[in-house]
View 1: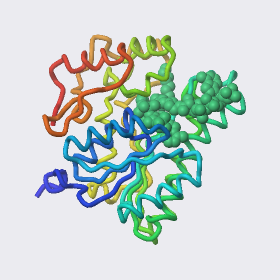
View 2: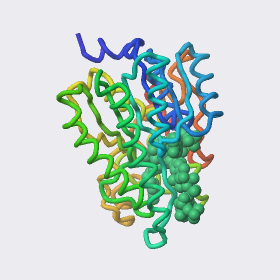
View 3: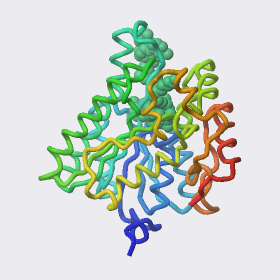
Length: 319
Ligand SMILES: CCCCCCCCC/C=C/C(=O)SCCNC(=O)CCNC(=O)[C@H](O)C(C)(C)COP(=O)(O)OP(=O)(O)OC[C@H]1O[C@@H](n2cnc3c(N)ncnc32)[C@H](O)[C@@H]1OP(=O)(O)O
Ligand SMILES: NC(=O)C1=CN([C@@H]2O[C@H](COP(=O)(O)OP(=O)(O)OC[C@H]3O[C@@H](n4cnc5c(N)ncnc54)[C@H](OP(=O)(O)O)[C@@H]3O)[C@@H](O)[C@H]2O)C=CC1
């Protein structure tokens, strides 16, 4: 039987407990829905309780299992406590999705030492805190799967050098942990690197940046931005037995944008401003069916308009 037919079914993760950090908004919310729809007891954790409760309510109304916990990933003691609480309450922790993170935009020459440290602390140290807490609190003894959301960093990230440095650090940390925690602890650990994704994260950008993004969305080999669902699908794959021999990799989910030469004029000549010819997968953020779909993507209006345009080409795939 086809491996996908045998494993990608409703109860793929049944009986498993998976923690998604930053699961109250955007990509994390979509990952939480994806995993809950596949049978996971999903625990979502972040600093603000209201968005978490909203997502918990959404998932429970759809018949899924969801718990919420307050967490600041920059606080190592809190990371340890949250893992202990999950194991005490649910008896296990089979998966960890490090999705919480972010940055502000700034040219490198205007970055202060404090600003640089803040973003490195959030993303690199925060991810370390979570991996270490998961290892010490459960996975070191029982094994497990870890996936960390980073960002596409191949050619650096102009105006976000701090986050580029932090994410590159995570990618390398992941390789080392795959080697150290694989043989004796039974842990698989990988990264997913999104390109630009239509999500709530874009609400953090200044209006001029949103305008720029809305105008340049076609400057990559798929001539569009990605969806939360497309990132979530990659995360589910890496957590699943279909990826059981994949360890220490960084899977770019960027439509090939990392292949850009970073030359705007060159990009304009190379890419297709007429519109994308690539079907967009919007399953989990736009509704696969009346049972598991979630309807709302919380991106800025101008960016959400792009999503409507992508779908209007009539080639979207709702598997
Ligand atoms: C072409 C396409 C390319 C696009 C390039 C795209 C990049 C890759 C794609 C990624 C997309 C996403 O991640 S989308 C997801 C975006 N979501 C987020 O970023 C949410 C999480 N962000 C945050 O929580 C905050 O931005 C962050 C600063 C990181 C953490 O906040 P904190 O409250 O911990 O920190 P603060 O106290 O606010 O700030 C600490 C210090 O940081 C600095 N600082 C903070 N905000 C600042 C700002 N706006 N400008 C300058 N400096 C700032 C100051 O030095 C602050 O110190 P003082 O001066 O003393 O105050
Ligand atoms: N959208 C995009 O184009 C891309 C996004 N990414 C990455 O994907 C991930 C999700 O982004 P997205 O959904 O777009 O953006 P959001 O801003 O919606 O998500 C960030 C989430 O992280 C949580 N978070 C932030 N800081 C902390 C902290 N210290 N402790 C615990 N939780 C925290 C936030 O919740 P709260 O504030 O309640 O703590 C929020 O839920 C991020 O790591 C982002 O950098 C990477 C590449 C591209």
